[in-house]
Image (cartoon, rainbow, N blue to C red; front, top):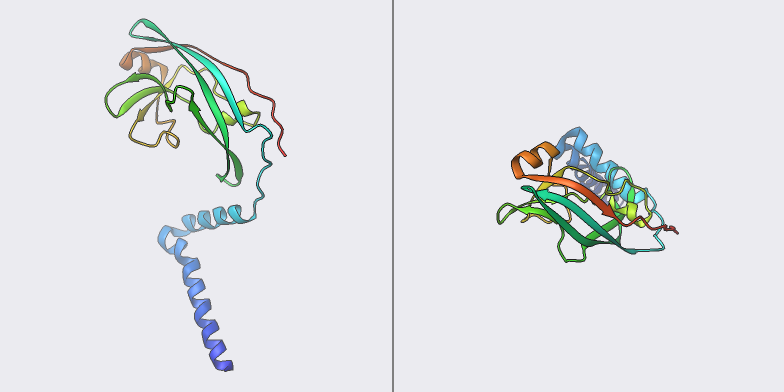
Length: 188
């Protein structure tokens, strides 16, 4: 019986070591280290406090020129708390956003069926408006090109277009960006 326990223990230990080494074998040392650091972040890092206010609406106006013609986009940025996610060495509050017009992008120009030029809203800066840390959506004279067949929630940045290319190639010049101020929030 004792011999059987030793054999079963050795087999189980071998299986555990093989499984534990897979990230290193499949991805190399760097990938293996990253896998286990993310795993330990997930298991050991406490959740950040939950926000008291989990929903906000922020009216905005974007003024731009398209081929010399002034255009205005007025809408409402809606931001909601969506829980916690693990990213880059810790747990973070996850904020999601959409526009009241039910569009996911502030579209400046639709080039074809799959490509749009849009004003950038970063999923990592929208928490600023809900009183969370971050930089907010400041005035930008650049834009992003986006493949509309991708999930816009996770590819909002797309390909960044600088102001010169935006004007020279697409005939777009950003004039102003006005948005409601951030709320004051508490986290418990």
